[in-house]
Image (cartoon, rainbow, N blue to C red; front, side, top):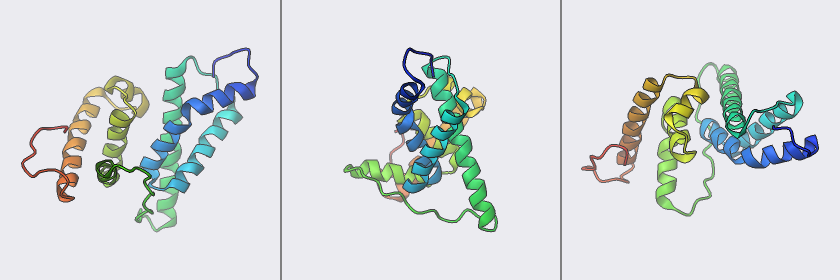
Length: 175
């Protein structure tokens, strides 16, 4: 949070308003449950409040928030795996509030991908981060992210074909 003339609570509220949707959406993508995503929002912002973190600028703030969310989600998933004999069982499907059928289909196909592809595709397409920005957030090389992005698109396309939602002859990558 940048130092302003506002009180710490006002600064925190402004940060919360700027970042809450990002935290929720990333947690929903990673955890697959609305209630778990809501819990994650509370955990991440409680951490920010308790540590009284100061950010250089909005980009630093966003990168820190997304990294903290990703790490907290990984911890929750690891804990879940340990409690369930080392296997990550099917988590409940989130209730998707969208009216758009294709958006729902794409969302469900995205959820079926491995986390490394799901998170990357989500941040790239839904949140609009560039590959360069994602190298800082995900702590991976640019070339690795480009390769994973291409592989993730192919896998997403395969999932959509399985669901019968794109023509079988649809050849253009990334569509």
